[in-house]
Each structure stands twice: as C-alpha cells, then as structure tokens.
Image 1 (cartoon, helix red, strand yellow):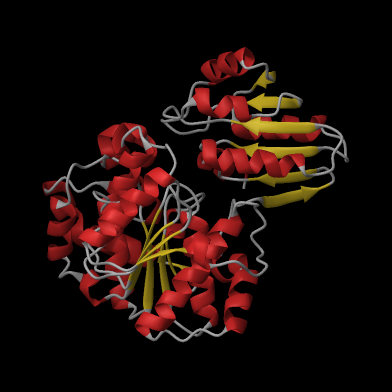
Image 2: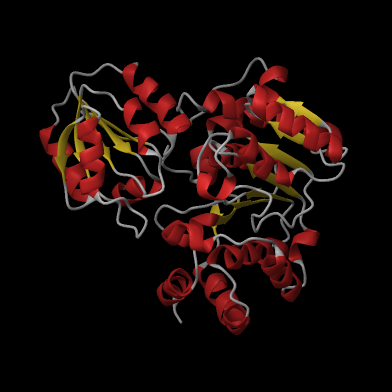
Length: 406
C-alpha cells in the first residue's frame, strides 16, 4: 500500500477516538502492552517526558521540544490529533516521520494489528516508540491522547510527568467532576518519578498530592514556583500558564537528570516554537486586513480565555466561523460566545461533527445571530467576503474546524 492507502486503512479499519468517540476507548492497557512486547519494547530504551492535561498539553509539549532542541538534543515529539497529515503526530527535531517508515511499519505489523484488534491510537503509539528507538533520539516528549491512567502512552517509565491542568472535557470517559478527571490524569504519576503540575484548583490539588504521596513522587506546582516567564512566538493568552509549566519542567530535568539547558537556550526555544516544531493552530494569525485568527481551543476553559483575548483586540465588527464535535457540552460553551458577533456556523467534516442544525438552534436560543453553511471552507469564505478591513475574523470551536482552513 502507498502512504495514502496506508493511512486510509489505519483510519477506516480501526476504532479511533478522533472519528468515533466512545467506542475507541479501551478499558485497560493489555493491548498496548502486548503490542509493545511484539515490537520488543522500544519504549524501554527511551528517555521520556510524559505530558497530560485537559488543555495546553500540545503547546507545552512543543515548547519543551523547542527548548531542548535549542540545547542541542535530538528530540522526539509524539502528539495528537493531527491537523492536515497523520505524520504531524510523530516528529524528530520538527521533521515529520517519513511516509516510507509509516508504510513499512504498517505493512510489517498489519496481520498482528488485525488479529489482535489493535486500535488506531495503540498502533500510532507503537509506531512512535519504534521510530524514536530506531532513530536513537536523546529525549522523547510523549503527549497523552486522552485522560492518562488508561491512555496507550501510559506504559512508559518517564524521567518526568507533567499535568498541565484539569477541566471537564470527555466526561463520558473520564468522569463528570474535576476530582474524577484529575484522578484519571494523575494515573501518569509513576513511582519515585517527579511530577510538575501547571494549574490546579483546591479539588484537583488534593488529588495530585495524594497520588504523589502514594507513589513517593516529588511534586512541583509550577504556578507557585515560577513567577516570571519569557516571551514566546505562541501568542495566546493561555500560554502564560503553559510557559510556567515548561520552565518548572526544565528546572526539574536540569536538577534531577543532568540535562543541560542555559537561560539563553530557554529564551530562544520559547521564541522559536513554530519554527523549531511546526506547531499550528494556536492563536495563529492567517491574515491582517481584516485580522484573521484561528485557534484549536474546544472546551469551556480554553474558549473562555480565547474569547477574552479577542475582546482586547481593536476591531469594528467581529465575525466568528464556528463548529463543534458532538460530545461537547454546548450549555457550558455557548454562553461564552460574544453576542455582538456575526456567526458562520457549520459542521466539521468529521463523523463526530455536530449537525449544524442542532448547533444553530442552540446558538439562537443563546441569543447568537448568524447563518449556517454546508462546509467549514464555505463558512470561512463567506466570512472573508463579508468582513471589512478593520474587522476581526475568528475561526474555531474544534481542532477539526481549524484543520479545514489551514
């Protein structure tokens, strides 16, 4: 199979959270442990940093990678989901895995995957570990897919665990209280392995402290320990929390693991995240007259910060291209959306995309005014047509909405 056929087979053949939601979620780590064994446990030869959290884990992973690259390390970066091409998920020093490696890995292991009902995500984790080991990287930054305790990435013994923050997202899997979600994320805290916490609430802090105590793990609360940060090319207001998390993570890696990083390399790393890692979709500016910004924020906590940031911008009229997936809590999200904007609603081109009629109906109930469109690109084109040069266009609501206009 060529690359297109290979990735199509991966997407179609197997349960996958990105398109299917609930049915792709595994109840334990049996499958991924068996797969790792089949691959001769490549993860055992990797020095990993494991990153979980409701929001910010992608930005945090990319910032850390950028800094460590500036310090001269060969850094593997595993993240999800991708925006345009599957290979975005697996990179070394910002370079995506080759199409050939993906094809060879699938071809070689396809019968094992089929026989053992290996999920898309488990397969991807196995591929990343196998690739990173073969490429003899110095450090691997491994982002959790969802949750932590039962996530396929949770078979590593990392140098450091990081939990960025806790919000109510994916409640059908992770629980519907902050304590329950924190418990799932805290599942990445390992025996005698330090953990850095980004943001916390009184409810989640207690969960983290208890888990760290149980595992004899040193715990660091970045928001208490880091008071000053440095500028970054990632301009979202929410990045201030992620930067503190990253600075604390680097401090722990330096003192515990002898990883050499200078202040100059930290500064350069933070200023060159996009260049070094090719991260996209984080308060990304796509045009200037009118100003167009897209962002992958897709839950209450993320969107709240983004809409507050939009209000600080100078513009005449606000145009918002918006779509969501069908497991989002609209009751929590829609009240955050500014009432004075013109909306262009559509369904992301994804099986989990929420029918635009439902979105429009609920949005209208919330006093939002706009029209529906057959596709995100059509909605986006209409927003551009309608906007004057001193207006502001925002595109978001879901990672998949942003993917369609990049």
